[in-house]
Length: 101
Image (tube, rainbow, N blue to C red):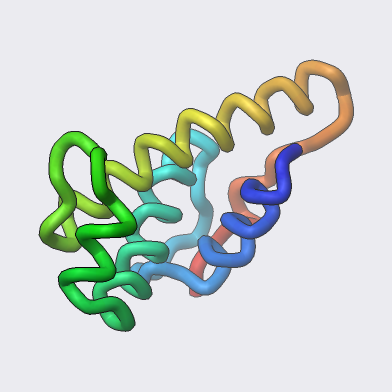
C-alpha cells in the first residue's frame, strides 16, 4: 500500500463531519474527498486552491467539486491498492474500523 493510502486513512478517521457506523470500501473515496476538502476550504485562499487544483477537470472552485475530484482520484487509487492487497492475502478491510464518530 502506498504512503498516500496510509495518510488518507488518518484523514478519513478524522471524518468529514458525518457520522457513520461503517464505511464500505466503495465509499472511502467520497469520505476522503469530503474530509480533505473540508480542510482545503477552511485553510486555503482562493489563489492557493486554484494553484493546487490547476489542470483538474472539472475546475475546482467550490467544496462539492473539490470533494468529487479528490474523492474520485483517491477512490480509484485506494480501492485498487486495498483490493490487490486483499487478493494477495496481505490485508483485510474492515468497514467498521473506518467508522467516523
